[in-house]
Length: 273
Image (cartoon, rainbow, N blue to C red; front, side, top):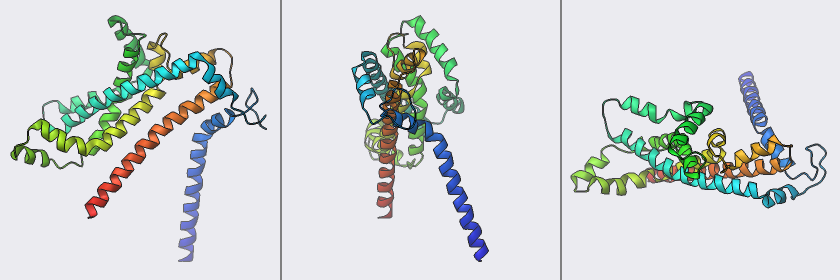
């Protein structure tokens, strides 16, 4: 019995150590970027030259970085709204209707994230160049919607899978119209997943680089602006920009997770009552 407990304790210890090692390997570059963004020295090296906010002040004073940040926020906001709406409609069609070719429909709806971003970006550049959207903010939003909508669809589909299929027919039998049922039953039920989809798709759009680099033109997003900075001389301002981008992205994801966890806990509590 003692040997079994010892072996189990050893296995758990090794598992925890391995997990910590994997996460340390994954997040070490991010942590180093954040740490050296506060370093007073120009070059990242230990020991520190002292704590300083000069690189954040430098990016705050840089018009190109401010414009790139604004473009990223505008594109992320627009893309998240449209992508969440399209994701919901695609998920609801999958949930409610049965039709020939539904498998192909779902495969096509989920396809964009599986396509290499370089190929997607070149295709977007060619298509938008023909219709006059290349190099514009609406063109960037449209391109990011294509990438983000499948993520929203996946989140809403998971939520709709828990909705009793008899609720809508029951409401129809009681005199409610299809639009009333959708507004009063379906939308409140999927509201947590819609909010999570908004934040997740905004994060995906905010971080997206390759497609934006190919089609943004003069309307650079923040990741594209960072690449332009790297093509010149390596500047410590990049650490500050990287820390800023990471902070925004992780904030959106964490808020989405907290909202989803809170709604799930509330649903379980209500179910236990």
